Amino acid sequence: MIKDLETALGYRFHNITLLQNALTHSSYANERWRDSLASNERLEFLGDSILGMITAEHLYRTFPQRPEGELTKIRADLVCEGALARVANRLHLGDYLLLGHGEEQGGGRHRDSILADAVESILAAAYLDGGFSAASDLIHRFILTDIPVEHPRNVDYKTKLQELVQQKKNQVIQYELTGESGPDHAKEFRVEVRLNDRVVGAGAGSSKKRAEQEAARAAIQKLFPEEA
Image 1 (cartoon, one colour):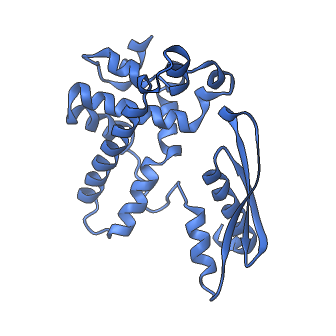
Image 2 (cartoon, rainbow, N blue to C red):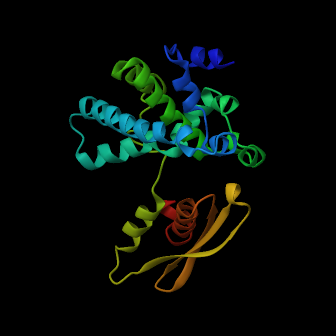
């Protein structure tokens, strides 16, 4: 079965254990071996840096007239969780993941955060197996093929809201966690955003960060509909 994934990747591993490690979630490693170091977390750490560096170099060379700020936003859009999860779905990566029972029952095979981490782990595995060129080839074929230069897909709503409200003086934005529910492996967080102590938006998400983004998006839709 793992050979099918190699075919989809267009890369054959010399050391197949590296790819197997990249597909091993911490929940599986802890259940099977009681050893989180046997999971893909270390590979994810390495893959994140490799992806960021190769993407930055590509943007630097491709857009010589773009300032640093714009390149930073484009890179963030390309390597964000949602973008990497889309890559994972193209590869049907969820079918190959090794998950613990709790994550399996909680829908971990379809969770964006887990899928994105697995993509970064595979990039690191390819780097360790075949060197810089192997990782670079995967990144160029799967991630750098559709660069959202004019219309970013990954909008930072918190930053956008801050910029909009600062058009007036003495504006204070605060985010407040109002609740959380669900088991540890599938929690939902609820957040309200306040502008000068007035609730202007609320949102929910699988992390506090996502919930804050959703609350900020709701606030923009309410306060600045023309910018939504």
